[in-house]
Image 1 (cartoon, helix red, strand yellow):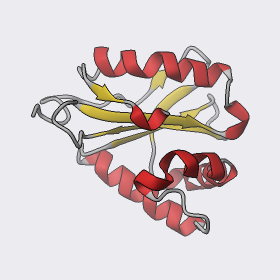
Image 2: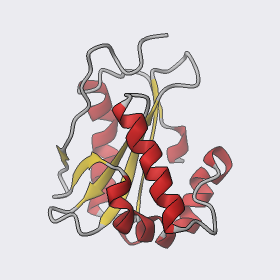
Image 3: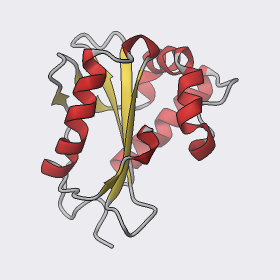
Image 4: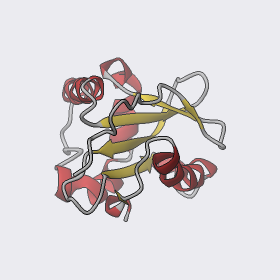
Length: 152
């Protein structure tokens, strides 16, 4: 199995999207905008991630979300897994998330999925992510074989 992430790789700290949004790594400082985004889209997120991850739980509290975001930040700093948020320029609202995880199978180099908040389903942002993420992972991350199965 190839190194995860590729040896010497430095993860991007900000990435511009065609929709006018940008991606950046997330952490516990984002709880105030992450919690309403997640819980406001909880039913759709549970349908996608519930069986695989048990997330997001129905009774998640802001404190639980903060702990989860701290875990993500720790994994990003250790280069174990990556969580990016999709933000507008002012970063006053979270519009979705992108996950880049190590592979569970030797057949792929990574696993990745993404979601947008309910109000952004079928939006320019969702289309931008759908077009951007596979190419970004191939061209910037050097990941040629990625499992996108959680994207439905």
